[in-house]
Image (tube, rainbow, N blue to C red):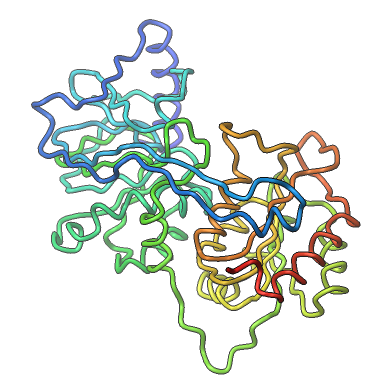
Length: 384
């Protein structure tokens, strides 16, 4: 059946079904569909030394922290996956409700429902790596690659196993998956219809349900970082500073970033503005691994700061204020930089934004913070 028609039928069916009955959400898979369950993450909290930022900005926030929840992985039999996000349903009509994004979704029409008569069968084992926002490079690295880790050893040991990714993402996601030794012919791209899967390997997104920091156990992210690590060729023309651009993003653009980069050149000298869409993955990773200073606004353009270590990182966020206990991508990226042993400063938006949440950053403030950060970094950055 035509893919567009399949999607329209599932959209129509989901709308009708959600108006007639509510979904029955279950936290525990029914026994007849469960092959195996094991814990893959224990709840915990990580506290970072934030004295560098506190010294630069003159604040009292000398530590920053985030926590994560318990999480389990599942081997399931005879399940149905619905829509491009692969919502997991059992044949009794119940939906598996252990993923934080599914739990937070109150608009049930958004959660596609399976249409068994139109289902395509997949034998498996199939590793579930599709879902909401996985088409975004940043979300894929921070949300989805960590939930691959519990299955990686099993995957390599079982030649029947394949990876299921979201529609339209296979080509670029295979570049990341190849770093884990996964070849393209073992990756399947989902459609927008229904799949019947004989055996599914499933783990939820591993960050805390409240999503405050949008990160999971540091061990997960460090495992991803190790897989993405690159060896710099000799010689390599490493820049002193990279300014990770968002000008090719659909929204939340930092409109005056070119002027900010010029101010950075007045302080640092060698500053290269880079659009990651213009560089292959290997070169992106090399740039983040080799630069001494990394600057950018929060977004997928800055996600590979995960691969940086011992750097000075300035993170600008579209948020006007970071409220303790509230969800914050700005704080998540700041923590991500700290996770690699970098010195990091988080700067909140200080000007109005437009309808697309595009914004500018005060250039004098930027130059002042960068200058003080660079001076402190050169002095050792409160390393003791």
